Length: 391
Ligand SMILES: *Cc1c(COP(=O)(O)O)cnc(C)c1O
Image 1 (cartoon, rainbow, N blue to C red):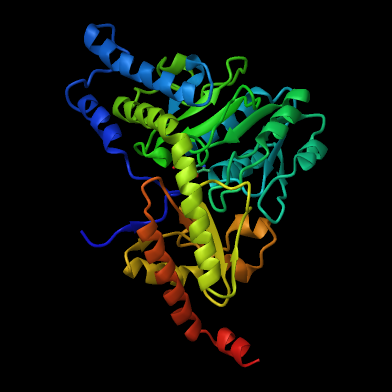
Image 2 (cartoon, rainbow, N blue to C red; image 1 turned 180 degrees about the vertical axis):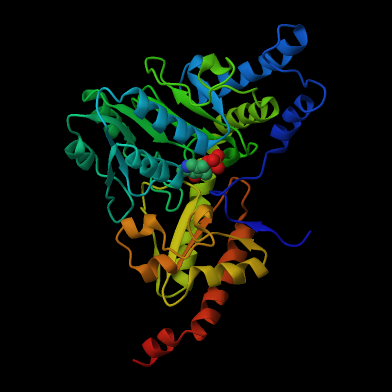
């Protein structure tokens, strides 16, 4: 295989071999439907129950509070649409932020078209929501607060504990899209007063197409998928047994590795940040220095287009991103960077590099060297840059 330097772990991750190994029998030998009454079905059911336990444990939830879905997008849709529907009698106001993943933002836009009122909170220049703004936006009729745990573009970790407290004190349902944080940093749904939480297996070295919604057992919301009686009648459809098995194994491994992995990634991340800032002039780090996911870096390079840089890096075997994969191919500047008060030029000149526990220092050095040279050659073609240089 050609060189593959994968620095896009916020988009998806490589499945752990142990996860794949645990999944395989559920494609072939144990193919039973977990809803059946015979012993063959019980085998599949046991496997999905074990996954539920492993996932619940990772966030200090109870096993019966985990509902399997097809991924983060479905979990976000379910949480917001069903809670909004269920709480309609109480009010129609939802509070979220301007930096949410499209799965939340576009669901909120849909709800706006259907009679709900949504407040999209600003963030500070680090990409962090101010809990006081959450407090100030609460009014009679506020039914849901949905703020992501950590941002997928700039890695900013949100003040979830303070927001959870505000929600609790005001009797408002609190949902968090934790897809980027789940399995990466500690989460305790009880301590943080989280009512609903979305997670997705493929962001923590599990398979694609499977995720979960944690629903606090004191919360009532409607079913999203109507059909059979799976998942306590709240999410119909035959369970994706191999996927769920893989998700459970990935959650267990994430718990085992978490502390060591965080330390390793932070060291590598900070080494990468220092090297880029030192080697590439007219460059800024986007996002927070301190409240940042261990594996996230995001830069703005003056005088260049992030898209052009991506194409050159691709020829060098490097996978990176200009923001969310969902906005790849679209020309609009990142809504996250714009909400942070960056200029359009800064947003267009951005590059996201996200690491994993398997990233090596040699890979980081290669990426730094490649970016340094690529940015230099792109700037040589920039009239703006040559004008700037002759000023
Ligand atoms: C990846 C991601 C999602 C979408 O999850 P899928 O499982 O790919 O549908 C939602 N929110 C955030 C923050 C993400 O990073």
